[in-house]
Length: 86
Image (cartoon, rainbow, N blue to C red; front, side, top):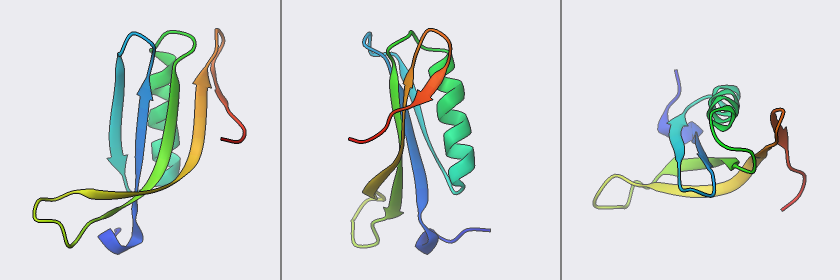
């Protein structure tokens, strides 16, 4: 079980047409798997990231504070591949 102090992982995938998917999970390997699966359903050239997030306890409405990107993928003709660097 994760508490919100452990942080979460936000994943986002999108292509040039604006199609995409996103989500939040407590496990980094699940975020990577969901991102990879989502990119597989999008057009080649689609990109995605997994970022570390925490709940903002000071916000009036529930919101996240986004941290560093921990994974960046790009969809090729064959598969989703890791993109090195920023």
